[in-house]
Image (cartoon, rainbow, N blue to C red):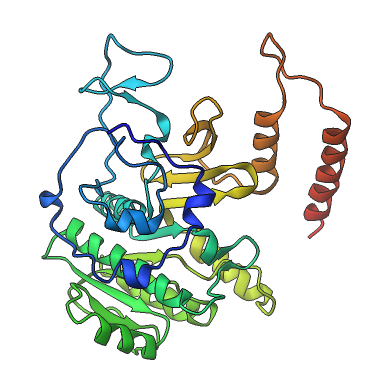
Length: 355
């Protein structure tokens, strides 16, 4: 039960995720059929996807353990009902399946709270580029993205209940037709952004799978119609926010305006350069986790923010956390290398302000 936690987020999420073979045979059962546990300590943080797919008895509910006050409260963490210590990083997913299931639960909670525009970001390193965004560079990457989408939408259907009609919308008609034939038993409807009518009476949720720049206008129009009729919209792993050349200023403004109205209900973004990750789950705040040197394979919460940490703000927080501290806990004066880095960071901020 106290198995050793695996290493950092970046190494796991970049581990080979042969989702085409791993997800296809996985049978999605009712959430009530899964064994429940109050503390997730059996699985290591971000176990390799291949190992996670073959493991049995895993908790995919993603529900945070209850942490009532107790006389056993210690500095290291909170105590659960069964006496096990709970830590802040217990909310992090153990593997990709756990992340997808938790994202579906968080989406259902957001929709139940009245959110009509929702965003899910699973930034897997081998499918995500810091500059270009969600990319599909290698053969088979597109199928991996669709398999992640299938798992997510199936879990969302289970969370919402059988009476709610969920429709998955793919970027083009050929892709939608191919996947519909590939998944004949899928519990959701299929559509593409090429369809003349995307929202139909009775649709409760439209899930846009990895929408790309050419489909942005169709996504915006369908979202507006769906919201006017009380239906919710979800964008999972959108390919709209990218640094690709060829996207004009008008498109970028339209994209930012559209995405700016969305509620990020779930996000997991590994940060390999600092051995950490950015995490958010509705209705919580944005959280920055860094590797905990005192607990191998685990992470410590270093920052909470109502806004996503990125760019200079993220660099400042990470640099402050890594800066050496004296015996009295005070920060040690920055060394020559750090001062030089600070100068370059200041110049970068100035250059960014001129754009």
